[in-house]
Image (tube, rainbow, N blue to C red; front, side, top):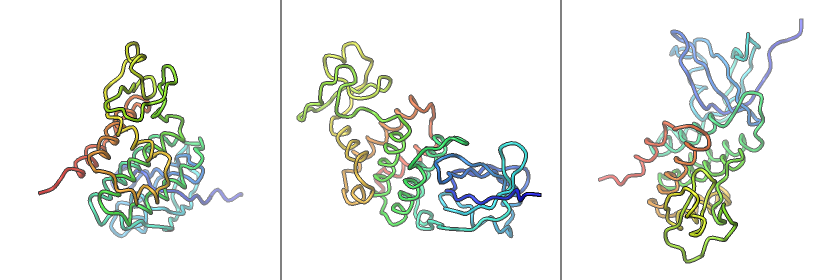
Length: 257
């Protein structure tokens, strides 16, 4: 009989309780697709799975094909634990936001090129970042993940007529439904909201810069929060998801006494 066990490398994006001691684990596979498997007994303290299936960890899973789409984890080997994320509330808040969007984007048996490598890269970078840099990286990741999934907003060109965003603009119009920046003329006919031009400028920088460049940029944290809020509304409209990690990430951005 042919061996029905196979190996898959993936990033842990989500864990769901199953029964008294099991977990359903959602991995982001190397091709950018979602892979769901059952880890039997993973919630038991003595389980070999318990320390290897932490959120945002990169693992090699040896999986037996089960019934339906759920595989059964036979063995899990830790490739990278990204332990630095779990030592700080701001880092895990930012990483959780990135993981939740990746879990919403990834579909079983549907490849999303570059999503795996990008997700591994941002978690590694966040693990060594301070609070402000981690949130900025989260905002950059959201924009990049949306872009490679086909949901990039137009940040410099009017979605109605193609007019460029003026360099000296203060407050401008932005259409969540139609796809981005709206000039004053088109704003009369296109449903839109007012946003600061500097928010769109920062979003454009985050979208097109490397994670290394993003980490070094040190933008104003209030402006990063504005970009995150814009991403939140964009994801609600275009992905149809209200990410539960957003309040956690945004609350961590508030000044502390």
